[in-house]
Length: 80
Image 1 (cartoon, one colour):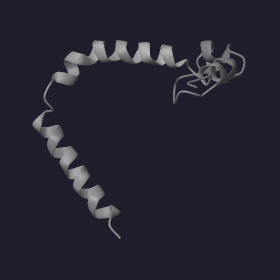
Image 2: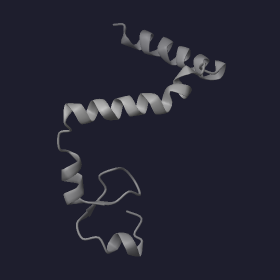
Image 3: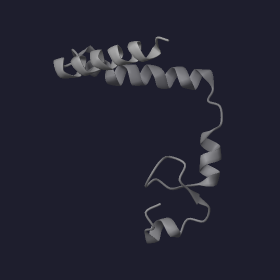
Image 4: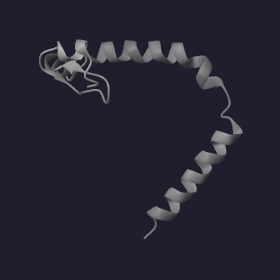
């Protein structure tokens, strides 16, 4: 919590979603409930449609270089 007047006014506010994000504990418990498979599928389809253009873009060379370096480090650290 950042300690703003609005956050202090929420009884039982908890830092459930990271720094600076306060949500009531009741809402945190509700967010942990299982999501129906059909709802999950509908959300997944919607996200794929929404981000299809971004996913089709090529990975920038600088990011590819960083990912390759990270993979190389992970491979050498994983070996006994």
